[in-house]
Length: 250
Image 1: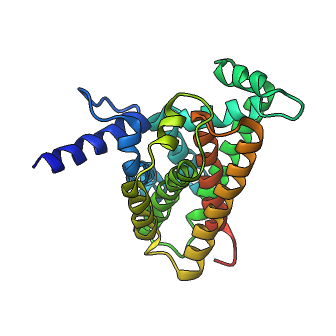
Image 2: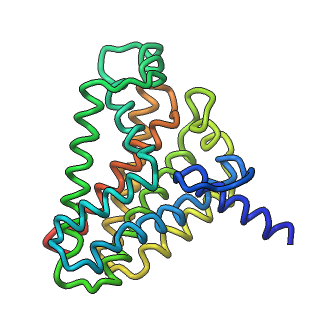
């Protein structure tokens, strides 16, 4: 019974961390809740895809509504991470200067441009995902898989990259466990299980490449990862999934 209670607290902790939904009381630390990130991400995708699956209005509008629901549910935390990384991690800056900019709550030109481009790509990717060959339930499944798999990429980055400084990023990186490894693999396989084999291989293989590139980049620039790095990787990963969905070959 205590085991089930701990799992429930960790699941609710993932909701508390990844969404703005009011979760009362104390739950679990971020690193203990992390194994449930993909599941919570899939649930965000499932809920946000309802306009795309069921509204009779033009799909471009429905995709914009889906994107808006995601932004509201998550409080734009991942977009904020992408913006901070785009502002801070530029050539010619010292590591200390980059950390200073990462802590700054103000947005610069590069951050605004990065978020704007990401939103455009996600909007068009969502519209392209809802092609005429998919039924409403498949559309919901595709969006849920993209959101869940992008959170798997966050876990994989934490598993292979040390933290650069104390904080939530370091918590994810320094508290690696066999449970996180197994949970991330199981959820990745489950979330992609209903997709065609070729599409599944592209998604999983591409996400591993993204994580490998991100690790190399963050190690070279920061000596590890911070919380903003995970948000940036999530944004890149979900855009990749949506682009693959929209590719005419699939």
